[in-house]
Length: 250
Image (cartoon, rainbow, N blue to C red; front, side, top):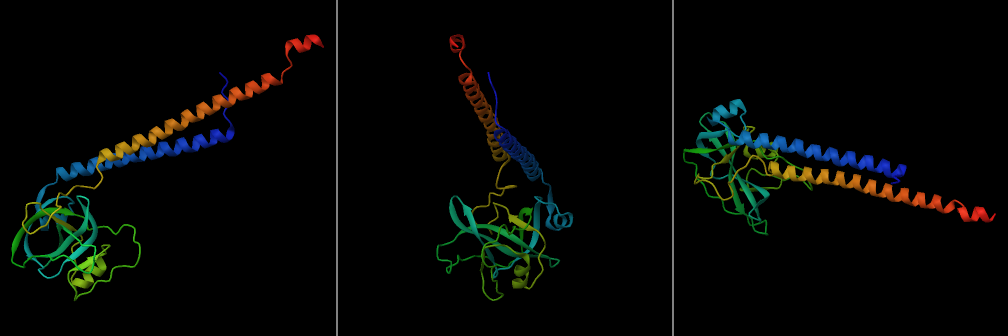
């Protein structure tokens, strides 16, 4: 078998195979990270909210006693639940020592007309809540203008979460954490099936298989094209040689 891949083809193969292989390894790394994250979520301790805040213990199961702010709520837009668009309701919760933490009370549907915001029920009676301690929502890639929050218009719809304008609208400093309200708490709404992350480890594993498959496919293509090129060159060389009969006639 004549195997003669071109230099350009070989260079392309090396680049693609290295790229696909690296992306596959990266997805395996992400899978391991997510697996550790999900394990940490499942094995998180039960603490008072004050203890969890002091320890910065993400995913801790927390209990807290305090008051909801019955009048002021932030509606975090572009939250999807069961294929439907809506918002997450973030309500300030004040502890006995004056610490204010945002509580994600779950999901509410949002009509296409953004000028008609959903009504958020609640009261400011002292109460105990249970939930999970988690990080505040991240901004992500911001497109368009920043949200303009006001101290005299409630509830307030936000496309992106940004701590500074939220604190300015409240006139209060927030704890740098979020409580995800327990699914069984009557103060919440729908969509409180909290997870450690949106994407599970098995998804990263599937992506890794895809990248490694592309790496193998690129090697097979390189091999096939190298063989075909070798055969073509061999045939061309054979055709250019004078035949034995022709040499005898001369």
